[in-house]
Image (cartoon, one colour):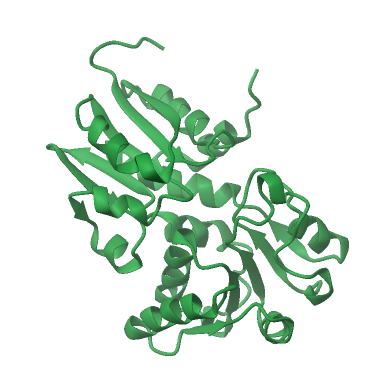
Amino acid sequence: MKISVDTKIYAVIGDPIAQSLSPQLHNGLFKETGVDALYLPIAVKSEDLKKLVDGLRLMNFGGLNVTKPHKIDIIEALDYLDPLAEKIGAVNTVVYCDKKMVGYNTDGFGFIKSIEKRVSKIPKETLTILILGCGGAVKSVAMALADWGIKKVIIANRTEEKAKELANLINESWPGKAQAISMAPEALKKAVDEAMVVVNGTSVGMAESAQQSPLPKELLRKELLVYDMIYSPPVTQLLKEAKEIGAETQNGLDMLLYQGLLAFELWTGIFPDPVFGKKLLLKKND
């Protein structure tokens, strides 16, 4: 690609960030659509987040994707929030336009698009989904699921108080749609037995915890769809154990795809072809 002074800069920021597939997705999409832009991975510590954003304002900068652990803290560095992102309290996409930083959240959209076909035989009003964790992506997904019209989203977290806060927030807008539980074995067992889909929204399974699972294997059932928002590694310990008992499994690659396609549309006005986008994500680096 030809890079010039007019080339607009986009980036994904997080810590860690080396595992991100977003650069190969967005650089491929920029090339395919003829948009003069470059997308970079940037590792940044929490204490340096505000300085980074302020520095980007001085460049020919177009926007950001934001991943762990910055989806909540990034809000303080922005000028405006999209109403949905404000409700969620977390941002995964930033658009820089007219010298203003505007935050959006496309995680919920990405998650729902990624499971639609797999749960299509289950009436939404009877669908219960258990989500482990309480971070930025979980907030977005849980709210999107409540808005989508499922029966109930159960939120399990090591700090039960945080799960209760999120459930209460959801129930303010969608009464009766959310329930909070602890990660105690008896509470988890009851929730897993009630759920049709179990989702890992924690970081357990990445990097130094790659050999760990956030859920005891003995609680899993073969009737479940076990979903891990992690996509690198593609098969986490949770998914491995779920496969061993015959459960259906899915990683977070399609969620990454669809949230990325919506981010691309927010930046450029173009919603790319999902089939082409998936090919970019699956392409091996030479």
